[in-house]
Image (cartoon, rainbow, N blue to C red; front, side, top):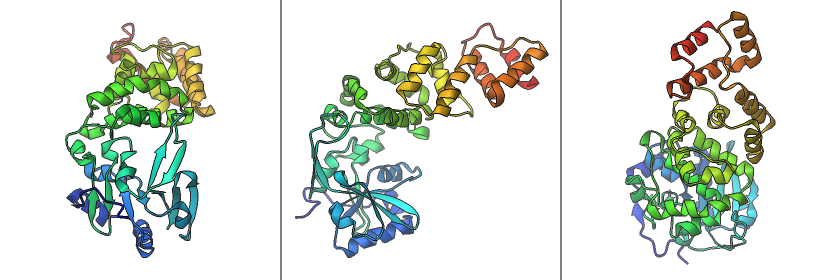
Length: 362
């Protein structure tokens, strides 16, 4: 049975042609192996999205008509998620996740399907993906692509839209809620807001985030925090009640600490958490670090940095030296953050020039 039945086969767009012409040799050899086995294989997901946006492609995911058992005939594989149809191919030191076309049913835990069946339709396989921008498939050997849900058009119009019913898509894996917020931040391309039905679904399905493992939540949330438009995205999450759902803490509208996220220079993701939690007490910080399952080092840095925020030494040299020793290597970043909050009007009792002089003296 033809796996692309019911879909229009389109010649590659220039962006896809550029991607195909610059594929790694390791991937080209894997694609050739599938051709030699008379099997169908397509590039799907994020690589196609990045190609259209002109941004760096970090990884390639593929879909195939081969079953996991058949894929293991390749000389070097890892059964990464064999139960769900995913096998990792290794070649020339590179890893590629390749997944059998499939249908899914039942998502009682809000994380993964209860049942998976191998499929024979690329259209059906693409229909289970979260967003239209991720539901595009490229056939390298035929130099064609398939876009049954108008993902290319949505990308062109800078629109975030779900494949089918947004509530259903988000309920299948609640982590998609956070992924959608992350996709809103398109870096230099600006902020892309979701269409109305998807925006409503984000608010309605947020209780399902309680079913997601903390490690998965932190993996997504940290990427949101370091985004170019983190302030706007995190504020939207606060307005939608998603932050409270995640951390059990109320957040103010137009919170100055959320506004500060876009202005932090240098530092790491923990600095952004510190700023975000500036006005919360130690117990709240403890609870947040526990709910996110931060590493021991991350938790230590969060709590120690939080403890000194809002506390600058007096103008006596000895006090400044004690402060510098106690804060350690983080001293310059701490003072930069204090200056930032001063500029945003958080601390009226600190003069901006005074803070700058302290930085210069240290």
